[in-house]
Amino acid sequence: MLHLSVTELAAELSRGAFSSVELTRACLDRIRRRNPQLNAFITVSEESALAEAAGADRARAKGDTRSLLGIPLAHKDIFCTRGLPTTCGSRMLQHFLPPYDAGVVERLREAGAVLLGKTNMDEFAMGSSNETSFFGPVRNPHDPEKVPGGSSGGSAAAVAGGLCPMATGTDTGGSIRQPASFCGITGFKPSYGRVSRWGMIAFASSLDQAGTLTRTAADAALMMQAMAGLDPRDSTSVDRPVEDYVGEPGRSLRGLRVGVPLPHFTGGLGAGVEQGVRAALGELEKAGAELIDIDLPNNHLSVPAYYVVAPAEASANLSRFDGVRYGYRCEDPKDLEDLYTRTRSEGFGDEVKRRILVGTYALSAGYYDAYYIKAQRIRRLIRQDFARAFNEVDVIAGPTSPHVAFAHGAKADPVEMYLEDIFTIAVNLAGLPAISIPAGYDQGLPFGLHIIGPDFSEARVLGIARQFQQLTDWHLQLPRDTHLPRRAREGAS
Amino acid sequence: MNLGIIRAREANLPQPLNTPEIDKIATLARLRVSPGEAGEVAARISEILGLIDQMRAVDTDGVEPLAHPLDAVQRLRADEVSETDRREELLALAPASRDGLFLVPKVIE
Image (cartoon, rainbow over all chains, first blue to last red; front, top):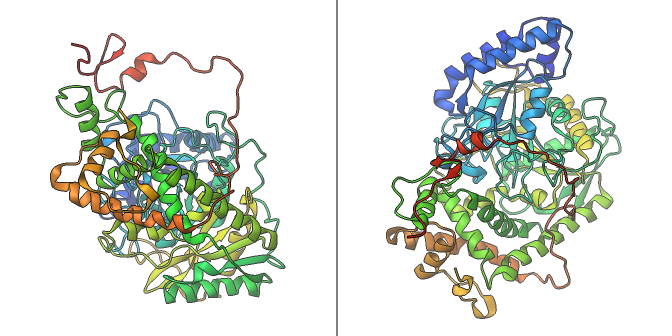
């Protein structure tokens, strides 16, 4: 049952093929076997998971038909879970027990999902390889020598490795889509404001957005139907109706205008990935879509602008970690200054400190206009590029990442790591919804097709992804792994 | 703390940061950079600033800064009590607390 999608599991549970307790037990067994190598989970909560599963089975017996009833779920360890450790991948929060559930946690609980535990991540979501976690790196289920991507690398590895059928993630510059691409699964980032950020530990508040990691786009739609909607506790949560993501896709591929962004096909794009992504675009074309070359003239400025906006906001958000109210505190502080400085120096890892320093610099007197305001002006230019493109096309599609997963330790230089997100970051700066779906293999490793839509076009983007997955079977190809029945790798149309 | 201690450079041209500048930023951020690592940190931060400095080549005169993708403004809510008293539960999260207060090292002699 571990190779089934959420959609299939829901059907099997509903016809009584197995119980939620049996399914949850199978996931827990698999975690016990695979997690020592993958390191995808930081916390596993067996007892509460089995109790929730038993509750789901009882509810079903009484006629409960909630969409995710009894389906095991993992949360990225950035979402506060009441009474269950929430570390954000940091020593700073190693022993933090949140006094409340995040909005996303509440909603998925209300939809009936069973919480297995919390997944590993780059510290405070700062990274593209899951190598900055205080709890150690995560390994890619397709090849343990390779990174799973980041920062939602634990969630991506858990789903790809068959440890759980669905997981949450967050995406500030590509942190759902890039790991989804590297692990061969489906990663969806909604529009900014579509899903509540309440109880999601803040990194860069004008960019952060919660989303999903699943095997299929239909599964992402199921999760999104439960997660999306207004949460008055998040002041940026948007008050507009949630569309139907699960029903028949409203937009057929026939006549669909797909923008192919020229800047995503130049420069560092690997030959194998380019060929595969062009073939994927060809599938859309065969199904009746029209491919239209478009330009995004300011795309090359997205990484520089992001590395002002995100560190600046992070430096402000992370000032709350001062050793006074919660979290880590240094031993024997000699005075208040020493308490603050030593707590933060010992509690944060190198990459987090680096970004706090960059952000502090960019916000400091004499530099605020030259860096922060300048970056915000460029942010508007980037959003205008997309607005112009969406006058001509319905969606934009290209590669998620320039290449497949790289080796652990291969990118020691921070700037080189930052450039990993060259195709994803502009989407966060503009606040748009986007998905990465499996589109092929290069050098034996998966890569994703990136589909970007206009503001609040979640239903359109998910619908197109679902139709793509009816035409192809890349999303059904699981990691080479003796514990799982492998599906046919051949036969992709 | 005087934020003006970081001297604005004339013409705002990118230059590598030196160790005293890293010390000043670290102090503002309440982070300690040991003398042994200051050179390495300065070099890394300077590389990042080099990446960021690509922005300067772009003419953004007349472009409004974008702080929020949808240019949204703060939503207001009714002035009603929405939080319950959870003082003990929240204080229990603190590394040190007593008599309903957070404890920190002595501030006033």
